[in-house]
Amino acid sequence: MRSIDDLLAQLDHDRVRSMTQELISIPSVNPFGQEPGVGLREQEVGLRYAELLTEVGCEVLVDEVSAGRPNVIGVLKGSRPGPTLLLTGHLDTVDVTDYDDPFTARIEDGRLYGRGSCDMKAALAAFVEVARVINEHDADFAGELMIAGIADEEDRMIGSVHWSEHGPVPDFAVVGEPTSLKVCPAHKGQYGAKFRTFGTAVHSSIRSEGVNAIEKMADLIAGFADYNDELDSRPAHPLCGNATFSIGTINGGEVMSTVPNFCEIEADRRMVPGETVDQVLAEYNDRLHAVAAADSEFRYELDGPTMSSAVLDTPLDHPIVTTVADETETVLGTPAIIEAFTGATDAPNFHCPAVIMGPGSIAQAHTLDEFVPLSELEAATKIYLRVALSLLS
Image 1: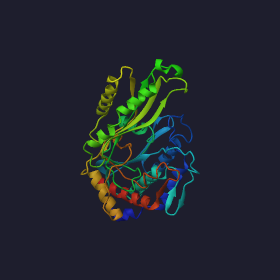
Image 2: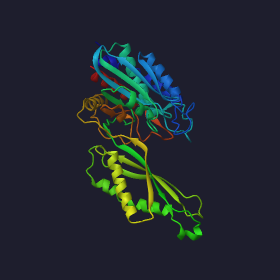
Image 3: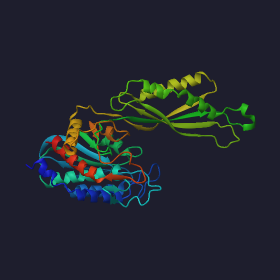
Image 4: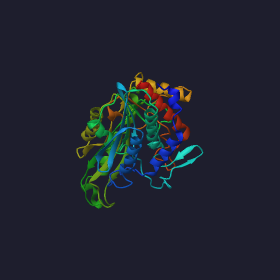
């Protein structure tokens, strides 16, 4: 049986860099509600990812969630029964408007630049290299190593939602989102909703005969003015902190000379572990009812969810957390930093204990000079291999 050190020596970091560059060169921008087509879908990069997984010995399934938008799943089976470890990331990227030459991956000053470099094609490439080393160098392991590229994480998460309804349930998962190699076993959930107010449209010269929906929306917003103070007053989650409420968009009225009969806002509610959607909706309705009780002309509608993703709250003493933390410390030579991930991810939809850990910084994702440090990519590849060998021993 090969030792871990022997297997680590077989990692080809030049190959990982080249794979990352190739994946970056294949546009996979999320269509965000547009008609999917070449460059605005995951199909092209997904098919190449399927080829890469096949080349390293995985049994591969391309599962088309919707037209041109596949999940890609590769599996290596061990020599005996055991658990299933999922290494996963998303195939899509955000938009490239104003990004200069986003799909030409270049290396400068120890950084690999290009759209999707840290978010998150570097981790996808690292997963393939882990599978190659385990398969080609006869690493003995139990259970299954599963590697997946998931569609649509950047928008509605249709890929992982489809998985949650139809896919296998692994025993644990590592999601390679950019965390600067910090170990993140928790993150907030997200609930988006639209609030609408209604009025009576009249000419603005006789405004007193109408009802101004924008003014009613101002009353609604005032009714939520102290909501974040209330959320901050509650006990904080040890990693995620406190829940938040944020109004992100507003739309109302058509022309200046007409009293508007409609106004709409969309609000983002970040939930901490222990909160539920029903609780959030009850809090919303309590505040809306209070505004309505003070104004007989206040008419409103609450519509949601416009976005919904679950919280992640993996116990700190779970083997997936302790193993990833231990192997991170071994590779980096310093204790692993354990904290919450700032955004929402696919992780809760896999219905298993999971951590978020990957190369690159979330602060660099979605920017116009996105990059992943090569030193972090090399370290992440080592950590992923060590985690797989440890959990599947």
